[in-house]
Image (cartoon, rainbow, N blue to C red; front, side, top):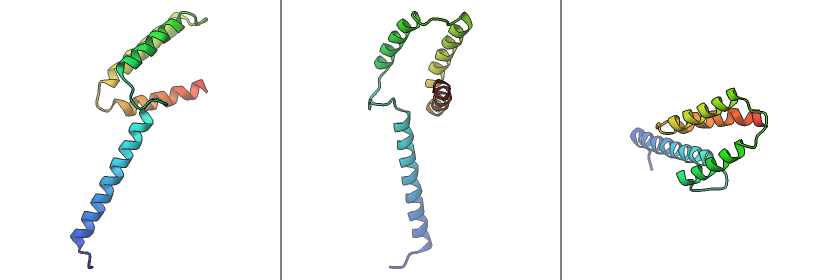
Length: 101
């Protein structure tokens, strides 16, 4: 079977499309919280309520830290509503995770 130039181009395009789809799937899986396939806004709400209760018992946080936390949460919600929000949020998450470690 002889491969023509146009057939070779088609094969390359198909492979590129497959790679792009696989990359997108991998990134979507990476951005999901660990241990949960489906994560809803109700799940997030429950976690935020629990976090709000925890914050009251944290000692040593000053007013500026509380304002910054509130600002970060507001920005996260704003960024989340944008199409490209996941990539930006992942970068912020990774950066903050380094400080926690």
